Amino acid sequence: DLTIVGPEATLALGVVDAFKKEGLNIFGPDKKATQVESSKDFAKKIMAKYNIPTAAYKTFYDLESAWAYVQEQGAPIVIKEDGLKAGKGVTVASTLEQAKEALDIAFAIENNSVVIEECLFGFEFSLICLVHNETVVPLEVAQDHKCVFDGDKGPNTGGMGSYSPVKKITSEIIDEAMNEIMKPMASAMVKEGVPFTGFLYGGLMLTEKGIKTIEFNARFGDPEAQVVLPRMKNDIIDVFEACIDGTLDQIDLQFADNACVCIVLASNGYPVSYEKGFPIRGLETFKEHEGYYCFHAGTKFKDGEIVTNGGRVLGVTALGDTLKEARANAYKAVDWVDFDNKYYRHDIGKAIDEA
Image (cartoon, rainbow, N blue to C red; front, top):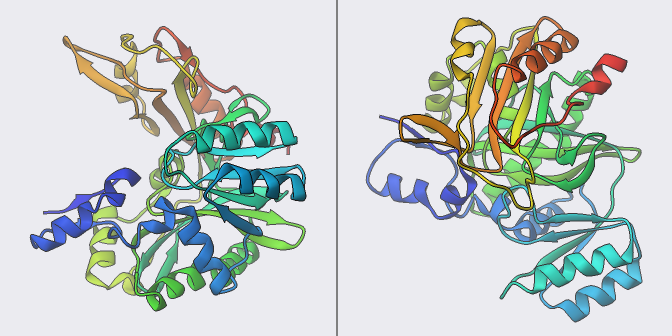
């Protein structure tokens, strides 16, 4: 009756177009609209054309000219490989040496291109919206922790944990983000002949010069979904169907006045190299506790048991009346689950406790 698409690669291959051609109900943007995520250059061109706030940038197709530009601009500077990189493929280079290394890696891939951006500084947050053409409805704000190690150190990952709400992001800031970025982007895509239906994810940064766009994604963020959806009061199927049917403007999205924290349990060595195939113990504990969730990411069923099968293995998630309580609950639940090679960050949402 209804297919909901999670992976960005599947959207980029045109699964929505294929289903629609067969008259099947599906939730997500079509192949052309998915370019907002599958091509960083595509997204930046639209932002530049319609004056949507983002970092200054240039796109390059060869190593020589890209390196010359980096030397001219200096560090810190951001190198983004174009195309889908599963939350990776972005280097925030604090030195020219790091930038050169990132460019060498990028251009070692045939027909690759890179977007080189000025380095923005500020407070990052995720604002995910339901979109149908020019109707844009925001969900609750979340913050994702991208770096693999505690203290936001190490390489970028697909996300090591998240929390919601984000107290620093006030209703005034959300209004600004909606009016300056999310609504104009949806409108721009309609004008460009690539109308968007689905989740439009805004990776945003609160800077001294206002809110800037870091990136757009064409689907619900991971692990942001894990902390936003448990707080939603609506039946999500009703919401999806309204989005598809063009009645999104009639939906009153409501969220509980609580908090949610997600801790990603990863395979040690992620995102570089890691072993998999280890049995996972303790998953049954979640069935005994209300307000606790264990979302599978990199697992598979093998020989009668669930084993690790990826870099990010599980999203251990818990609700609480406050962020501090939700964080304590989530870390308590982390101890319920065990597998060889288990790794996780110890400071997801830690600033909450210290605030």
